[in-house]
Amino acid sequence: MEWAYLVIFVLLVLDCLLPVLPAETSVIAGGALAAGGQLRLPAVLAATVAAVAAGDLLTHEAARRGGRRLFGRWTRAGRPRQVLARTTAALHRWGGAIVAGGRFVPMGRTAVALATGYARFPRRRFLPALLLGAVLWSCWMVSLGYVGARVFGQPFAAAGAGTVVSVAVTTVFAAWRLRAPRQCTTEPRRKDQR
Image 1 (spheres, rainbow, N blue to C red):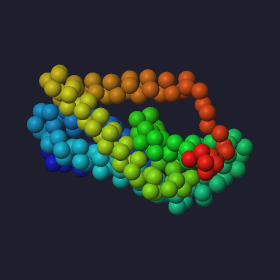
Image 2: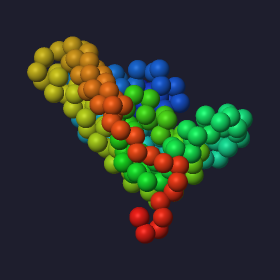
Image 3: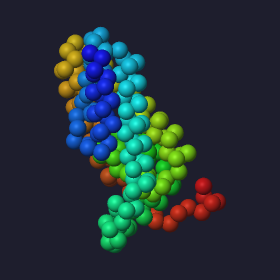
């Protein structure tokens, strides 16, 4: 089953650009198969962390290099320009937390990678937050499959249960976050506020 690591890696790298792929399910299944002894847990974790970091970094760099051309027409309109200004301000204020936490929000991975690239978010701040988010998310998703397989005794039932738990937790977090008051402004912080 050595090919399973490659499948997990490829799905996760491509998932940043094609979020309809079953990447999360493959990670949960990898954790479940590791619990059953078919895969090695450290290798599943390593493939997951490497793929998440690679996919996010590739998307970030693509948006950094071609984002202005790609989004140029879209941002000429009033509303998209305002959204982009608020997003850029939020990145400069809470950048590391947004990059690391964006991984846990539906479609957040793609949105954050594109936005940070487009806004030319500093790499020295992006990379550590990206790696932190990749490690935390990978441990969470692999653990869902691993623990689920130990509890249920069936790897594929564990993968299904892990997916349901992941979707439920993400939905609750997103609903909570949407209800929180928004305090982002389009004005950058002064140096004395940093």
